Image 1 (cartoon, rainbow, N blue to C red):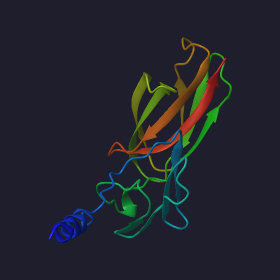
Image 2: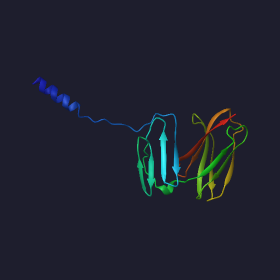
Image 3: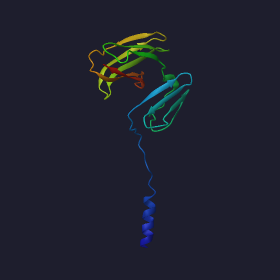
Image 4: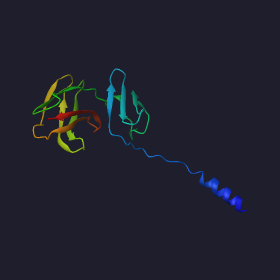
Length: 163
């Protein structure tokens, strides 16, 4: 009788399922979009296969970095930009072009995420715009310039050095 209860307890305790929470412990990552193939790639350091492929209204995601909601390819804006000079002494400039009319948010942070500057800009389709970035009062060190789309999703990030 005692061995039967032990066997029953052992069987019931082994029936519990494992649950994994979505979380990433990584020091870096980014996003890349290729307009010629309609592929949006998100990645984190330490995860070898984390990709989001979008075609029309469908998206395929892999790994733990899956969004809570899916997006269509029409929401992705493929901008072209040049950040110069790098490293920066007194004046940094951003030259940016978008194939469609879009409002973007630009943000300068340090590597700890402290925000030093933030600005919304309106881009007209095909028009080149040059933006002077206020970096003269920043301390020497590494900084990030982030680009956010109208929904608040990070599109690009540029790491640069202020000397």
